[in-house]
Image (cartoon, rainbow, N blue to C red):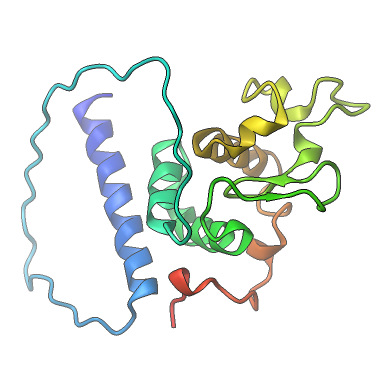
Length: 180
């Protein structure tokens, strides 16, 4: 990652976090500076991450962590509010959420990705998400990173249509993500 893209990613993350915090804690006084402030970034070399990792489920209500992960994996910052709304409503921002009663093989993880997307079908004999190279079996959707990548692929393919939560302006938001 170049310093320029790192600055862009950090700026997008900070903007999304500030937007989400404004949602969570409305009415905070604006204590920002009255004039532009120069920001200097310092980058340090870090050792490469291990090739295998153990995933810890996100705790309930950790919507900031969900939004930060989404932005780091390529979601546009302009979608941060909707990402938080969908994740909060679908799973309370919990990565190990599973709804076995949902149609087409259950719904998995933060975004409650329906089994329709990973189960074999007439058009996708191995499953749509498998054909996209995102996973090999549906249970992997309980991994927060894989679930977020899968949700992004579905969103790029279909927009927010698969999530009724995102399309309903009257949807009650989880208390963590309320903006009023």
